[in-house]
Image (tube, rainbow over all chains, first blue to last red; front, top):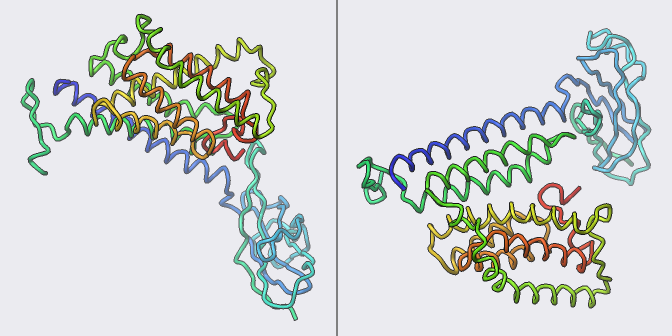
Length: 144
Length: 234
């Protein structure tokens, strides 16, 4: 292969790598937005042996009710819609109305330390993919 | 830069930091990475439309074709020929019979009932074999006419380049364990035969017939519908 052909081949290989790198970047960003709702805000306020409570709002659709799922010690425990009365969230101007709270009954647990996590369920445009998005921080609690 | 690695081409006299072997290695890595991107990243990230998978595949084919043109490789050299069809088939016959015999034996030992019509039951077997021939031809073209030939630039004709071709072919079938073993063995045989009798038509015949035999004899659960890459977990 002569020098010119070799240079052309090198340019081709570099161009292909650049296009693929750009494609991967585009896919990573698109995948993030397809699986994550950056407008979800919420807090897991409390967890104990009786209940797990908090609130969640989709700031891009402030009057929509969000589906949430409770996991205790990394195990699915329950699903619900965050539509409980929480006037404080509305007063703090985080929501368009008073109905964005969630309350779960804590499942029966052994004595000791446990961790509760609540996730908002996010569905992409076509509904083909549903993902979970952690609300606030995991909450550790004790049962006696 | 290490001066030893800098070569001057006879024609242009331009200093060229890339040796022929490094360039061949880069070409192999580039095409392999395109297939992996399609198999693992794009098929996982893509929604219902899988059109995005066509982008790296198309880029890989553009590179392969341009590389043939720039290296002045003729279709005959690449294996698009009929004069050695029978010679290539003759070399393939014995390993094909051996693999078919072993897979029949495995089927009998594992209690699986061979069924030569279960491969895509919705299609006539002749149509399915024609599709498999086309798909096999395409795979053999990339594997032999490109990867095997570049591997020969790297390490010459023989064991090392045959092994590299088979390893790449097997690696592209990760994480399907049975398929990885089968494609490694197939890769060794096909790369060996191609280095002696480069004929893509004979390899495609062998590829489609062996796929048919394996799908018809080995337990369905073992091959997981020939799924590879991210789809393996679907």
